Image (cartoon, rainbow, N blue to C red):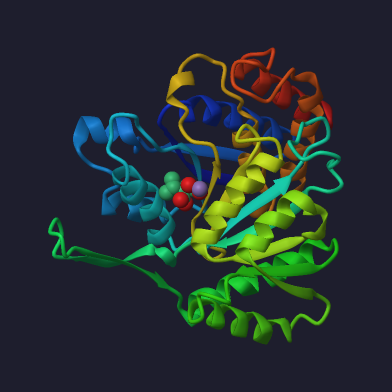
Length: 355
Ligand code: IPM
Ligand code: MN
């Protein structure tokens, strides 16, 4: 019997629906080639839905989404919605509600893509960041005191639980072993200043490391990591870090791998529902123009298939993305030399032809 994957799709806002459509094309081509099938279940959540109905992501929807092994997400964001509403109400609610405790962000410079780093190439820029995805400063702990008065106090606390830190670190060790490159895992922290949070991180890291004698470990402060990501990106294999630092260093990572047109990520719950997304936002100024680069979303779709156990399909999608890149004039929206649809078609054809 053919294996069928039920995938929840949240196209979302702006260019989200366009890039998701091209991602689905690639998925269908891979399904055809590798003999499985995919059923898509589309959900309407996003800024547009919020403007129309006043709802972000209802609890019932979260329960519905829990039934799927994976969600394919386009982009969430709307120019007319105040900052914070959609981020906390949809994106973070999904990550937290579905306990997607790992944010997996590969930083890989494809052959033929320009990096702003002088004298660095694809061999030098190929690592993965594992960002803790449910705790830290993102947990929403804190509050105001005497808000709006001259004595106002605002507190935002970083929550780090032994369980949350350990499961993330364990995932990172497992991935480092599985990647089988340099087998080197670097903890990114700030032990010299954040003496409670990163004390817990470093102790946990060193304890778990004992179970992985084949993995070389290293530690660096987040500011030094930023420096080395620019100066010596080749020294990294896998980096593990907390939510806030991970957010920041993966934007830096996206830039050295060629920009938001190519950066993809996965929000992983190994025992539940995971979610895959292009890292770039909703790019409202390009929406509906058929000019946005769909490769990040297509790569996210590839990561999703890899995660679901269709490693060959995942690899074929990644290879097709690599094969199409040299044919594009640029990775930037409107400058590719092709439309969004054409790039998606080229990838889908390549997936079929590679077979
Ligand atoms: C990301 C984004 C989100 C984050 C925002 C939109 C809440 O920047 O996925 O990195 O900070 O995690
Ligand atoms: Mn971010």
